[in-house]
Length: 471
Image 1 (cartoon, rainbow, N blue to C red):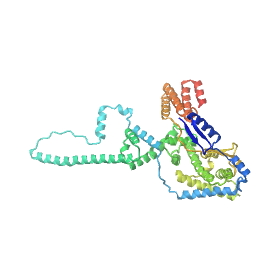
Image 2: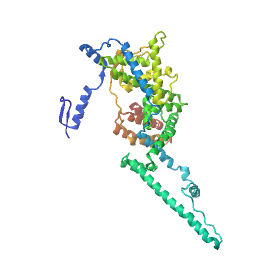
Image 3: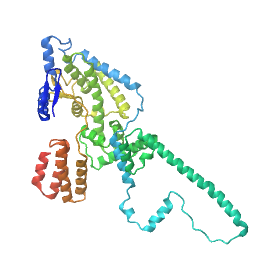
Image 4: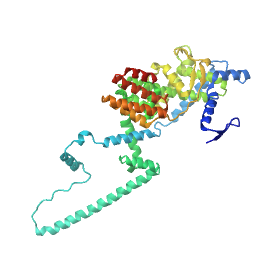
C-alpha cells in the first residue's frame, strides 16, 4: 500500500511503504517537534527588534498587573457560576456499577449450602405473589352454597382482571423504557446491558440517572476511601490519585468529598488538597499564557505568575505583596468551593510548594531550570528559570483489559497463598502487557513489579531483583 502526504508543498511522500513513511515521519517529528524553547525565542526576537518594552524587566509591574487582572476576571466568573452544576457520568462508572450489581445478585457460598426446606420457606416469604392456601374441608351447607359461589365469583373476577391489566401496563411500561433507551445507545450496547441480568435495560432514563448518582455518592466514593485505608490502592502523588479515580469512573470534582470521607487518612487528605490547589493554579497560569501578546514576554509572564502563586509575603512594609496575598487566598477559596465543594481554611500555609510546582509543570507543560528555588522569598523565579514549554494533550492511555484481569488474578492468588498460580497469572499478564502496551509502558512496569513480588515470596531472589530492575 502506498500513500501520498503533502505538508504545505514542502514534503511529498509518494510510492512509499508504511514502514518507510513511519521512519520518515518519526524523523520529521524529531527535528520539527513542537517544543517551544523560550530562551531562544527571546534571543531571536531581540535580534530582530520585535521585542516589547517589557522584555528587559524580570518582574515588571505591568506583567504582575496582568496576573492580577486574570485573577480578578476569573474571580468574577466564579462568583456568577451556580453552586450546583450539571453532573456528568464517566463511562467507567457504568461498568463498575454493573459489576457491583452483579456481585450483589450472585449468591454466596453460605446461601448455596442451605437446605431445600430453608429455600422453600424463603420463597414462601419473599415470593412476588401470595402463595395458595391449603383447602379446608368444610361441611356442605345447601343454603349458603349459592351465595358463597356468587361471592367467590364476584371476588375473583375483578381481581383476575386487575392482575391482567397491571401485567399489561407493566409490560408496556418496560417496552417504552427500552425504546427510549435504544434511542440513546446503540443496539449492541443495549443487548450487552440486557445480558448482564441487572434489569437496568427496563428502567426509565430518569430513574437510571438517579440510581447512578446514588451509587456514585453512597457506594463508589466510600469504597475508594476504604481501599485507600486498606492499602489496596496507594496513591503517591496527584497523577496516581487521578489514575485511580478515573479508573473507577470518579470525577476529580469529588476531591472535596474524598477529603471529608478520609478523616482518618491524613496522607490521603494531603494528596487531595495538593491536587485541588494544583488544578486551581493551572487555570491561572493558562489564562496568563493566553493573555500574553509578545512571545518575548512569555517567559517573564510565566515567572511573574509563579511568583504571584508561590511567593511569600512576609514583608510587612510592602503593601502590594500583602494585597496580592489577600487576592490569591480569596480567589483560591472561591475556586475550591465552586469546583470541588471544599472550603479552604488555614491549610495554604502548610502546603508543599515544590510538590504543587511539580504537578503544575506536568499539567501545563513547563520545563524549568533545575536549581534550588527559595520559596520563602517574594520572587523565587526569574525569566531565565523558564526553559521551554512542551505540548500537553489529553489522551486515552494504552491498556489491556485481559492484562488487567490477569494482574488482578495474580494478586488474588498471592493473597490466598497460591504462589504457583500467582506466578502463572503474573507471567501471562506481563506477556500480554508487553505485546499490547510495549516493554517501556508504565502498566508493563507494574506487571514487572508484581511478578517480582511474587517471585520474592517463592524464594527466587535473583529473578526478583531482575524484575524490579526492569520495572
